Amino acid sequence: MRPPAEMPKRKIGSPQGRVTLLHAIAHIELNAIDLAWDMVARFASPALPRDFFTDWLTVASEEARHFSMLSTRLRELGAAYGDLPAHDGLWQAAMATSHDLVARLAVVPLVLEARGLDVTPAMITKLRRAGDKDSAEILQTIYNEEIGHVAIGRRWFDFACATRGLEPAGTWQCMVAAFHPGVLKAPFNVAGRSAAGFPQRYYDPAGTSGA
Image 1 (cartoon, helix red, strand yellow):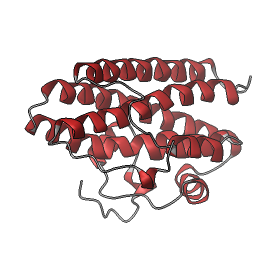
Image 2: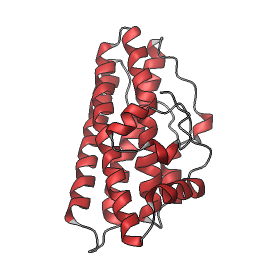
Image 3: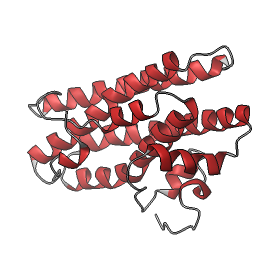
Image 4: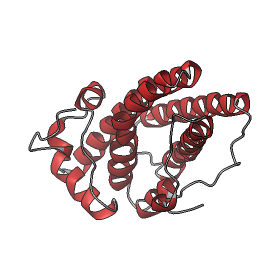
C-alpha cells in the first residue's frame, strides 16, 4: 500500500494505462465493501433504525458486484487485481473517522464517494474514445449505482445530525475540515451530486463550480 500521492499517473490511451485505471478502481471498490460492512458493525446501535443496516448491506452488495465486474475485465485484459500497487487513502479516512458516525458519514460517502461522481464521467468518455466500450460500460454501471450510495450517505448523515441537534451543512463542513486531509477538488459534478440529493450549499456554497 502506498500514499495516494505516490501512485503513478494513468494514461487511458494505452492498454497498460487502462489496466492501471481499472486496477485502481477495483481497489477502491474492494475497500468500499469493507467500509460498508464496517459501517454496519462499528456503529451498530439500537438507536439506529433497521433501514440503516439494510441500506449499508445494499451498498456492500453493490460494491462487491462492482469489484467482481472489474476483476473479470482485468482478466480479459491479461491482468488481475493485486498485480499493481494500491493506495491507502480510504483506510486513512476510515481510521480518522472510526470514533464517530457523523464524521464517517461526512467523509466516506459525502467526500470520497461523491468525488467518484465528479471524475467518473470523464473516465467513461476517455475509455469510449480509446475504443474500450466494455470497460466504459462497467464504469457507467458503477457511476449510476454510486449516485445511490451518496444518497444513502446523505440520508443517514442528516439523520445522525438530527439526533444530535446539529445543522447538517455546517456540521459537514466542520467534519470535512477536521478529518479530510487536503482540499475539496473542483470542478464538482453538480448534476450527479444533486441526483444523489447532495446540495451544492454543502460543498460549494459560493456556487463556483460550473460542472
